[in-house]
Image 1 (tube, rainbow, N blue to C red):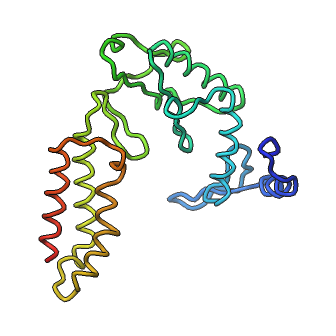
Image 2 (cartoon, rainbow, N blue to C red):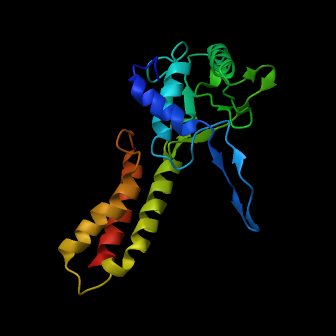
Image 3 (cartoon, helix red, strand yellow):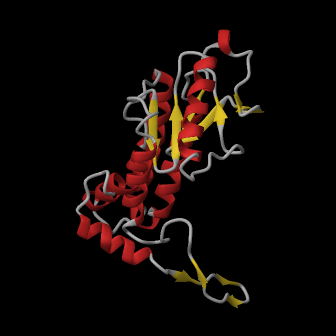
Length: 223
């Protein structure tokens, strides 16, 4: 916090919050005895995301690159490179930068994806351990495919739209409720769920049609 320019009085307040902190764990048979919290941030605290962002900003200062080569969201990190060798090199640099300061890179959750078949035959290793290769992965709720297509994401968005519509179907199918109110509910609940993450995606005509057909069906049911 000091390196980030936070005033000393606020640093002292946070230190006081975390000094000698104790907690209990609630389980099916009751609560455990109190124990000291020596690692991590307070769960449920509005301050915790801010503190974690400060920590990650400082720890990654030496290794992070500008977007799109490095994309960070909370404890999820995407590293992009132009070759498999660069991916391996950058992954090791990140591992060293984080683990020397007490963080841990999860080997089981680390995956890599190749979008160039010419580079697709090799493997990526982290400290001698082979990193799992995948054809798709989720990042911030969106599905990224190695072939650059978006079929699965569009289908998932359509399904999310229908799930949202079913939640408010009692309103949408009620003939006593005005179309204006139904339209507001639709724009607030259904459409954001169906279009999440698609604002910057280049869709094919067929994929646009899938979204339009789903929307028209929902609107017809609302009449």
